Length: 356
Ligand code: KG4
Ligand code: ZN
Image 1 (tube, rainbow, N blue to C red):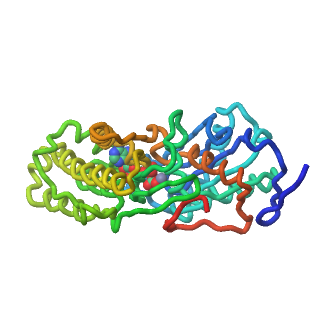
Image 2: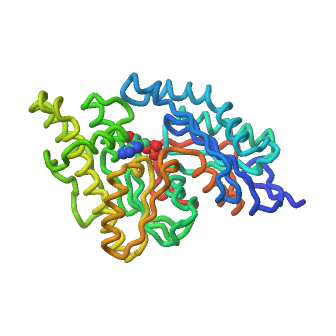
Image 3: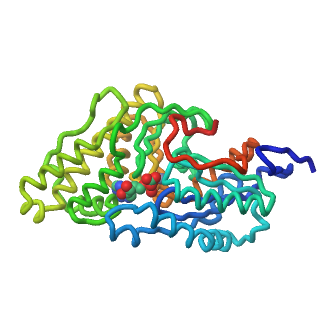
């Protein structure tokens, strides 16, 4: 066997890399997740331990508590992922872990666990970018989009539009200048007393409301550009509630529906406009907010009216998960890209979260 050295100390032994079982680990925010993915495509297991119950009490993620919960959860979650995949640690050929962006204390738990696992077992390991992993989620389906495609990544921490030409070639077309779409959902939910996280709750509540009852101004910024801004919309909802708290309390569903329609209008418009500008026939939707029913429905309907093909991440791959981390990590490892043992996590997003 030929040993190729990469980074410090970890040798990758030549093996049949197309039959590689990659253990993925994700701990960037408030979900501890582990998954086993074979060949970078077949999800053998995907376990997500959510901390919602802990943070719900505080109306948002408390970083210190989140880190502690990750420490408690990481071993059982990895064990469960191995058990569900019907595997032992000896069956794992490589490890992929989220390196950033995210909460540093949280990232460190998964990152150090992965390092220790890889070092103890002499396995190749790689730190992957959380946003690149979200973008990769739509490729883990039975009918993935062909390159190139335009993708909207909308989550709690990020909202951006990307042009993906190949696995390792991404261009960031635009991103939010302030709040991410999911963050706006969470903050509006808090204003309405709906608790944390707010996206799924507003999604449900909006279904019972009249989206035309309150028309919030759409925050397009420049309709021809790809940047987003959701902070003004959030403030508009706040002002609306303050102006007439009684009717807001009586009809929260109308506020939820009006707010949601404004967000969806902007997201769908910018995604379709980006596809037109890039003359690209394929669009994709990923990230926690991609789970939104109205957004999925509107994007599919509007794209159907054109010749665009729409690819939306499956529900279980929209929110944070480790299958997307393992799926992307496989391609790094296949290309012999590994991470050094003295590498650190990073908190802020990179302008290009691709493989390079
Ligand atoms: O991707 P994700 O799990 O974590 C980050 O990387 O941020 O996204 C979480 C975000 C939260 O803000 C949550 O409120 C939002 O996704 N979200 C939704 C829905 N489900 C989750 N937003 C709108 N509609 C939903 N159904
Ligand atoms: Zn995420």
